[in-house]
Image 1: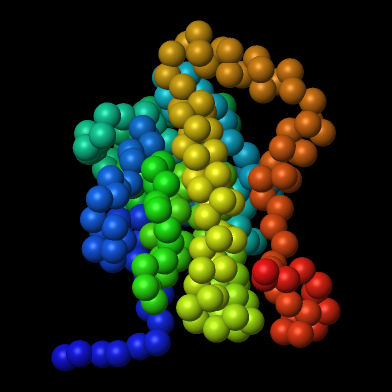
Image 2 (image 1 turned 90 degrees about the vertical axis):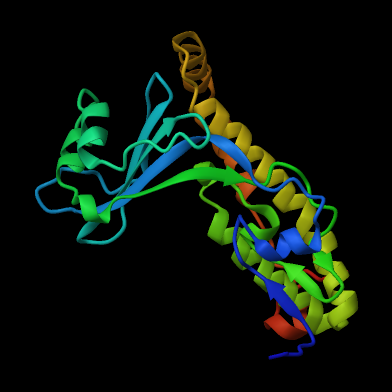
Length: 253
């Protein structure tokens, strides 16, 4: 069966098969150096603050959590490993790994169900693509610029892509709009991908001396400076024309 379309949006993830077909010389995703376990636990009986919290340990390990609603807590554990190491997908092993960490980390692991635990090795697009567009096919989201979870922006960047693409095509038509989208999105998303990979490398530091240096420098940085750096990285203004947004004045050029 053959289908035809005016435009194809390839949003098939970090291991995009369509990206490999469009850019066969591209090296593909790079291993970030660690694996991450994710899951949800019930909030009842757990004394967990309703904030996003992340604890950095020695030996290439991290643990974080966030209350996502009145009844559940999202928790994640990261561990530095060799690529393709395939550690045992075992909640009991994970509980042992973090058993001496501060409360409420051991309790959150004890409250989990093995069947709800997910594990994924982390990959991102370290190398720049020559373009996000080939003909009338456009890469969107992780297929174009996969980031590590260290900046919490993977899904957000995909939404930004969709908004920019719609605005560009709506204002300039498909062909010119695709080129405008590519020009607008690549600098920001490529920077975010590199930033996420570098940050993950720092946070997953395994050596005790390097970990101490990381923690000392971070503690010494003034909070306003940290917030300014984060805000500058995450700030984004939709490139809409006022005719289509009810008053937003930034434009696609």
